Image (cartoon, rainbow, N blue to C red; front, side, top):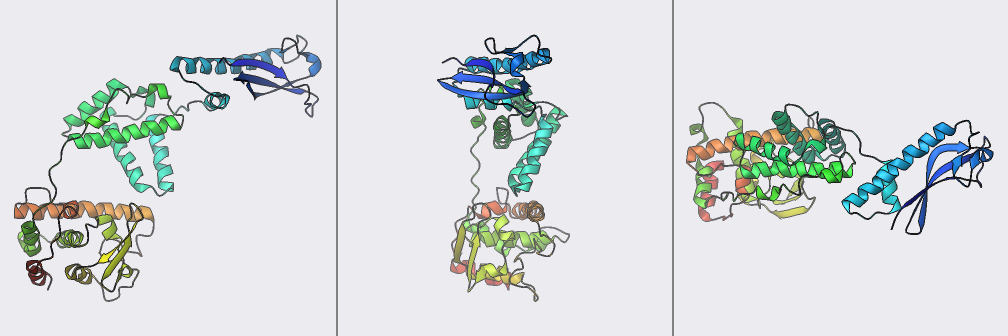
Length: 379
């Protein structure tokens, strides 16, 4: 059904200065909506048959110019809906016209979004955006462009750039999924129009490859337990010992990840049982700790430790007080830990990169041999 536009001057409403407001009236599907033009006129100077100011109206030209400008905006948006083949309500029409696409370049939008996410304590999401920003900056050498500039050719060039940097399909997929998510949010935030969306023809789902199995054998676990760390490097590396302990603690403790391990406090351990809330989901996890896991905990306990102190020497409750400080410290510790674990893996000839994530994929078997190795390693 067509939408009709009329201009009306309200007879029934008289403003303080004696004039009446001028409104744009929209009619569709038997419904009406009035849009204020922030104009008014004396009723004696308004032609109610032609719905137009009379020639004796002192502001006639200015009023006509505003009416024409606002009417043109609505006519253009109605035409745009028709071109897109989309139905719309009067509410949708008004929303689209009165809240137009904001002119904000790619870099400005990313910076603004990161600030919003950090204010919401969504630091993981914010980190993904920061990493995408750095990648695109290296690709384009500038962030001074608009989302509408990201078309099919742009995406293909970015793909070639990422491949040229030696990135694997899964890594490329991570970048494009982040970019697609960002583009969808920009549409919602009225920074770019939906008809500029380039991902209908560029399939992000194609960037996937089967990854190598990340679990290792029980024999490899034993070798990690019994490895003499002094043979790994000639210089002191505190993360070698910590990295191995975190790896084994995860292996022994239902695959707990490093983020949750770093946040464990002594008060989370009671009568040999560990109870904590997963950082990612908030879900409560509780299980009986293995003796070897308990020994790892005791290994790092300081004489002056309180129930609120962290178990592992990653976070310090007196230093890392804000969520951002905690996340940054854990991120750095994760990089250092996984670097140390890769050294251990190389020393032992393990065929995959050894990380804390690998421990989560290993099946725990607490055998008599493991208990013997425990006594040998942690005594």
